[in-house]
Length: 155
Image (cartoon, rainbow, N blue to C red; front, side):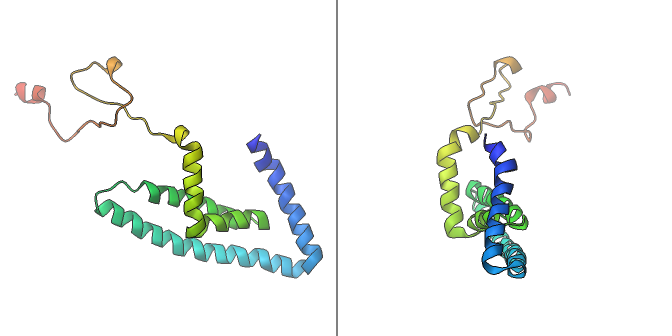
């Protein structure tokens, strides 16, 4: 059902809003507003993208996982794509994704609502267990930098 709204309902809503704005302010102002929002959106996307990249790098340098920054990056890409789509409804949603004080609450709401679906699961790889008996609920990663003792025994 959500995909049906996205591919059928959203374009119909965009056309309806564009026609309403057109009847209120005219054709040329409507076209200029659509172009203006796209140009403003690209400028804002560039500004926020570089700011997010700086936060991402500083988080990595401090030894932390940049989960919030990665989610903000996804929101920026999504918002930028919506701003390049002609229409006022998609532009509004796109600007909400690009403006920091609205983007962060949206991300928090999405994580609270869909966080259980997104939860990362990794496999525990331990050399003492056969591949079929390994656990899939941990967060331990195999260390590929260490050589096993079997490699040293062969020489």
